[in-house]
Image 1 (tube, helix red, strand yellow):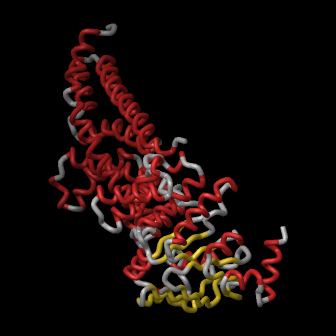
Image 2 (cartoon, chains in turn blue, brown; image 1 turned 90 degrees about the vertical axis):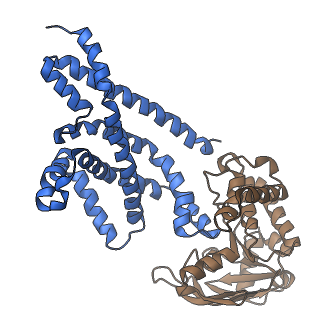
Image 3 (tube, rainbow over the protein chains, first blue to last red; image 1 turned 180 degrees about the vertical axis):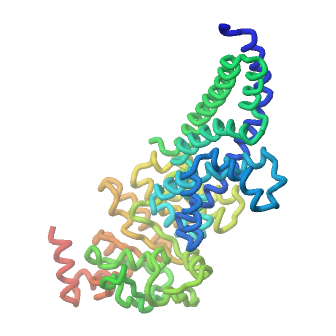
Length: 223
Length: 246
């Protein structure tokens, strides 16, 4: 059959039309995951009674089971037990599943980063009269962000790629489109190579963004 | 102005680090605390603005008595806002410039408009001789400059009393002078200060009163001339002999 260059060039713009949806899923997922992760990290750092225990179980579960299993549980399983969830659409389910899954990893990253900040920073903040919550927001988290950034970016990149699993819930995104194009044209190699290249380019762009952010955040630490 | 009563603290049930400290400091008074290492000097200072929670005792500042072993959140915040702290290791906010370090409290705690806060911070930088370092981050400042910014940050809150926790002991010898000089300048302005220090000459020169602590207790106190030249207690004498015999 050989490599059909013109088909390959033809399918790329078609696939790019769905990149928006993929990125919408990933960016919504990132915002929710980061919010959840920060909250969970703070609960763990301050060892909030009861909540700390719950958070530990949640993190253990979402790190300890495959994302695909979690998505199936959420989309196909839970509505059978909780009828309120029956109407949930596949896109929402995918965003929730991705958020929960990656928030577990991000929470541990952020917790470690917070613990990596010297105790003197919190004490200095308290000494000028800031409340612990204000000190967290103004002094600790901004410094922790710099330490956490490389790991968080890795996890976000993983999340971008993992949006392809939403295809198994019936979300028509990048991967789903590639799969459908492939099965109607029988040009599997061209279709999947095209989709692989698109993911790759997106990830490379975000890696560049990471380098830029790292340089920006470390400005304060150069002698 | 500040009355410390029966301040007691032990860590994890071991022997008390502070064993019923009573100490009064008048407005404008400069009190230096000296004594052997591990004798509770720093702990006393850290208890005054509740960086450590004492086991018992009370602190009155400006007539408001706070039962420090179980102070409410408001009382804790209130006490911290009336005191300021200069740390041994400077404790500057590493992600903020010298100017931002000084302005941080003015903006977030004292709710001043940013422009006004930065103006005041710039004036303080001028005062401490670092006007040209406004945009420098702590990592690019010398130890002496960092500690001066630390003192500038403490000055910004215009607190009733400034607490100094061995402000020069982390410094290379070459930077000690400029920091002591700045504290002396503050002393001439009648800023109330409680200073834990190992610099005996400095304590003699700047303090109105010197307190000698050992074993979690105040052993002896008095004007510098009296305490250094005619110590009454044998423990004070022994200590002074050790530190001045070099």
